[in-house]
Length: 321
Image 1 (cartoon, rainbow, N blue to C red):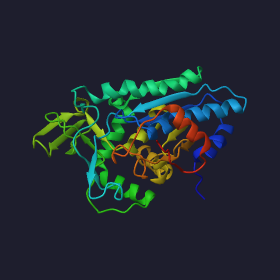
Image 2 (image 1 turned 90 degrees about the vertical axis):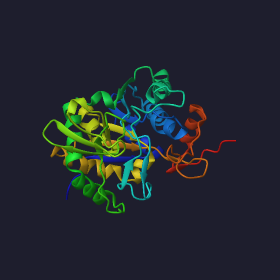
Image 3 (image 1 turned 30 degrees about the vertical axis):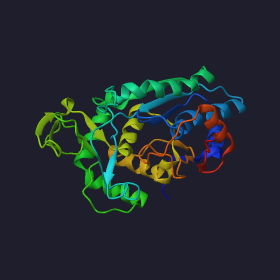
Image 4 (image 1 turned 120 degrees about the vertical axis):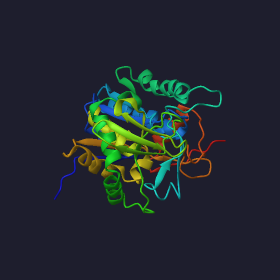
């Protein structure tokens, strides 16, 4: 029987269970795209780290966690496809990445939202002074050798990657030839491009928007990469032993997918990891709170924390008067 080194912990009971196995100084990964900050984000990246620190204290230990916070500026502005919620792996990016996105006032999205999100996350350190928080923008990892290998393999072996994702999740498919990473068009910054690896460090990009073609070395390109393989690259780069993710990742089968993807990319067994998943917060229409669904709202950390401390189920319905 194959022994899994991935341990899954769910919701409030998961916080209590995983805390019993921790010293208090572990390296923990959390992630968000630097674009908006709604209560669903607050629940996963601020409230649940706080709950974990509180539980560590209740167990007589001191929280000195090292939080690695990934700001995913390589994520797309939005996805398009036949049904992006049903066919998870038959989607394509709509326009550009958050790295190049701008607000209506012309300010770069990462420059507008990054500091606001960072300010929210710093609340953890205000409450627990011995923890450390490191903010990392994914675009700054482009020339890391691990990230480079993951991007190139994602481009070259997209069919094998899709087959693996379908197998581990059981998601339906339309059978489309989906890409999970592309180089950004240098001319119009479009990311729904046809990108191919010609040689070890050379890529050819054909833009579907401006129809220009480029052949450039890896280091001269910017990138879009789907969030699931991106997690694997960060896992290997930072060597975190724990992660906190939103409940939608659990429903999508990420615990099993991450394990299989690690072996796919690095041809070795994944290291031990404890994955803590927060509940799903419902939005205005009683569906999962989501930026893409445009059903999010923002109250305050205290409201989210109070709800999280009382909720043991997979769903929180936060009623806003």
